[in-house]
Length: 325
Image 1 (tube, one colour):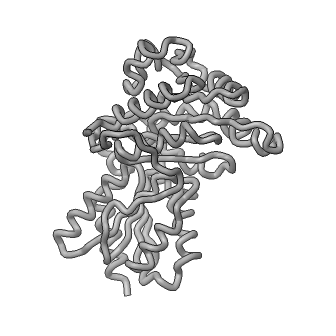
Image 2: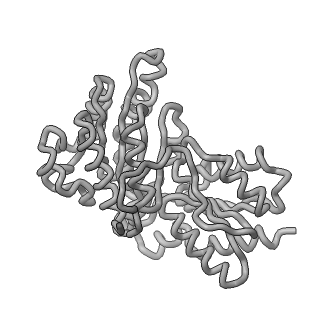
Image 3: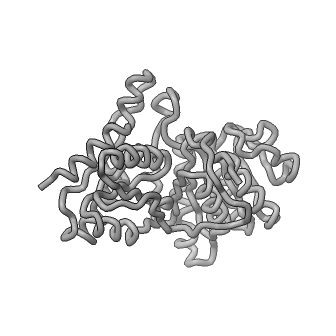
């Protein structure tokens, strides 16, 4: 079955809400408006307003409400209109959701999913175009997922909903309309398992979310030039499946990491450090990182394009590691 990314998310939540009456969806305009990106289309008609809860514009308030509901035994899904608005709820996410299990000595759990669109789209301005996954990955107690395909989005969202811990689930805005095969049956994908999206021998690219599509495009072009690049999608950013990445690097000897987020203290820096520690003797060239620029996202379309990684920059980085002596 071919579904769009948003349809795959819709199907995942619908299946889980039918399976377990403790699960409910809460957020701004998730009900009668069907979500800002129409991910919850048809939900209020099927599940009613008690399980599909429209809220005021108060991210800290409804995130805190969901944390309390999770502690009491329910399984909330919080939809943020954009992950940028998660900044407003950061105190609830970092100081409550992520810490309650630890601070209660394991007596309380917070089975909670906080999901919504992240990264840049098209000219949404500096406050709505940020890639904040490195922030969330920095916090002990949070799991962070950023799937790139409809198949992975569905399987990982179902696993996130079933998890007994708080999960940050990031959906790149420009992926909602992309389509892919999700199969015909019910399935889950384990949290913390990366996937080799393309096999290769000459270099490894690690990329996630919509940067994965960019990496695959670059790999296709490089293949036409005689270079076969292996592309790894972590899918889950925390916990990170380092063994899969290291195994690929040991095979190819070269690594390029592509992320849309800012370079300084970015997620790619953590991946690079981990690979250096685990596979330094296998590297034939320094690791290259292709990142967003360390600037607030410009509104101007040409400047926005310049601030985000593109295929040319990825290809240049791969050629650089492959030509290093």
